[in-house]
Amino acid sequence: MKILDDYNFANKKALIRVDFNVPLNENFEVTDTNRIEAAKPTIIKVLEDGGSAVLMSHLGRPKGVRNPDLSLKHICSKVSEIIGVAVKFVDDCVGEKAEKAVAELQNGEVLLLENLRYYAEEEKGDEAFAEKLSKLGDIYVNDAFGTAHRAHASTTIVAKFFPNAKCFGYLLAKEIDAIEKVMRTGEKPILAILGGAKVSSKITIIENILDKVDDLIIGGGMTYTFIKAQGGQVGDSICEDDKMDLAMDILKQAKEKGVNVHIPVDVLAADAFDANAKTQVVDVDKIPAGWQGLDAGPKTLENFKKVILGAKTILWNGPVGVFEMEKFSKGTIAIGNYIDEATKNGAFSLVGGGDSVAAVKQFGFEHKVSYVSTGGGAMLESLEGKTLPGIAAINE
Ligand code: AMP
Image (cartoon, rainbow, N blue to C red; front, side, top):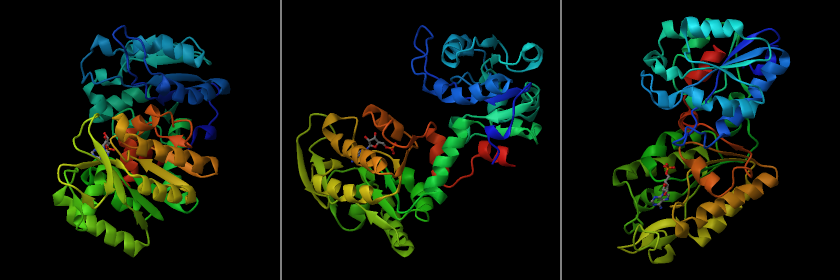
């Protein structure tokens, strides 16, 4: 795996694919700078080596149209402030103007190109467009994990024009390392905590992960499909009847593979899917009609706590309750606290995939776990065992 430290950028122009797809308010001010900060170490390394950085990114979904609201010029001053260098901007990302701006770039300088998705060719992975991009640097650096699962021109195709001069930036390397730990190299016992709403959206992950983990905690809305499949009463809880066979099959596979599956034994049930609903704690397989399980119960959390504190490597994907409502957020908060404790005791913990990060941030756990992934879709696909095109393109 080629990483940034394999290269010295002195007198070189690094063409860096970053993920500056940041949220803007109505005054076009950046409201969340995380992604810019995450790209900073890579940019600084290039500059400190004595090279220059050409940054390319998409912003929003202009779909091939030059929508001025989605110009990257809006974020240029914020990038300058964060990087600590006055960032230059060119209002195109390919062609004469962009090439001229790159030619004029001096060592120690940073240039931000205009939104890649002003060209429809970007998302199509157009080869001619990728070749034009490749003229804008000596070494290609991919540091955008959030788009690594897309075979776009700037994330994947462009790499072929740098057969001997391409590498991962620090951020992308960190993401790959975190996934590797969970999937291959992590210390045992390895635990995956899978929550969220539906079995159907997590099935590929579960199937892939059964070969990698020692323990699997299943929580959240997925629980009820497993409970009903085993003959339990789930009341009005969310349940995918057509996935019950699949649930039984997962349990069978887990047994064959020696994976310990931990499913809730009790739940906080509510008489409506409502923030002010009446609640009671009931056994997970005896939920009365008219009631639905919306969070993990106290016995369940005690069980989960033991498993989490015993784990050396932890993946957390998906909340164990409807965390958006305060009444049903306690289980998810408890899980976060147990992971925090396990991490302090030396476990490696990774949170990521889909919307998992939202729950983690809402409760302030992002600095308590070892690593929070920056790419929802890309992390999901990695956990499903897929090879991401953006990663493959560097390794080829
Ligand atoms: P996912 O995107 O699949 O990770 O699902 C996250 C969503 O699952 C969150 O919005 C939660 O509110 C929801 N969820 C978690 N537990 C339950 C439950 N017991 N019943 C319904 N929805 C749930």
